[in-house]
Length: 442
Ligand SMILES: Cc1cc2nc3c(=O)[nH]c(=O)nc-3n(C[C@H](O)[C@H](O)[C@H](O)COP(=O)(O)OP(=O)(O)OC[C@H]3O[C@@H](n4cnc5c(N)ncnc54)[C@H](O)[C@@H]3O)c2cc1C
Figure 1 (cartoon, helix red, strand yellow):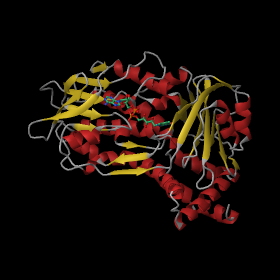
Figure 2 (cartoon, rainbow, N blue to C red):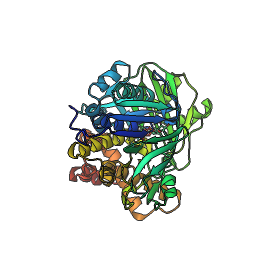
Figure 3 (cartoon, rainbow, N blue to C red):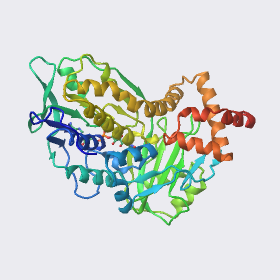
Figure 4 (tube, rainbow, N blue to C red):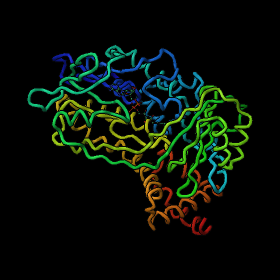
């Protein structure tokens, strides 16, 4: 897309300061580079020139997939990047044809779909996006400084700079993309602003992941989901960047161990022959890494009135999701598209931040509801507060999984909803309901 007119009509140079060179920070920098003169990207950690994992993103040791919607958004922001990542060894797959889905009711039938998804190491995906962004003229990377606060104008209405461990950095726009552990609520409190409303839904999920060398399989990915309330354990296996990554997880605090024997023993309890055989023939290539901060956590910054002008919050800093649903990157990329659409329509940066925050929930709503709906059931189960409705939903889901194993059309609907190619109501289609009722309770 050709750069549109400058927001200020070219009258004066504009600088944006983006905090955090993760997925949201990179995507937002890509968009801003078309609209401002300088984008200063601030990242406390050293960024490798190649695709090794780096500090600041501990999740990089765990499997990262992009669903169909995320992949499309990636291509819209970075045309050709998907092919580039493919050439580097990451795999694009048809989630119906190339991935095994192992429900407690059996393995779902494989089928061709017109959907495409991507499995990749986080490090490779991020490194390729980063290379694109850093090649943009307006983007200037500053590694080392950690953002520590905000500076306002004397009236306290507009953010003018960010304070960092290496001095203040002034900007016409400041973007918080510091991820799940964003310090912004603290910074706002120190400016005398009210605490934003937050919502946390925690299924108590813990991950353990490792890389393996293993013979090629008839599939590229395997998903063994946990199922509320009885099956707390799940697994993902995927071929990424010429190796295999195995991620085991458990909900409600039933977390996989990180010692090799414990890891294999946990996997064996899934009673899934495909997982057991895979691990039997696999040789570990890495230590086992764990990750436990997986709660869905949303901060409703759009409810703070008045919102300080020139301050944007994006990515996990605004809405972090349980990673087992694989939605976070796609949502962060969509927020960059939202910013682009707002910047394309306006000539002034004033008020942009308020408009962005107000519209941000539209980019997170689907993923939030998908994650938080299921995790709220886990949370209630964990706290001994299961409701009658939870029991009905669990019954329905078991019926759905059974139907998906028997009926390719139902499975196709399941895949489409997971990849955001169809609304969740697709799983309430009369045909699906009829099949579930005909099968009786699971
Ligand atoms: C275990 C796990 C697995 C996941 N799997 C998937 C998946 O399969 N698919 C998917 O779509 N999503 C997945 N996610 C979610 C995904 O990783 C995040 O949604 C995504 O990285 C969000 O991007 P972000 O830029 O907001 O945050 P991050 O990518 O985490 O980046 C935040 C950046 O901010 C920097 N930073 C932190 N503090 C400061 C500061 N004070 N000043 C300046 N910079 C700072 C950090 O160093 C980091 O570089 C997973 C997450 C986890 C935890």
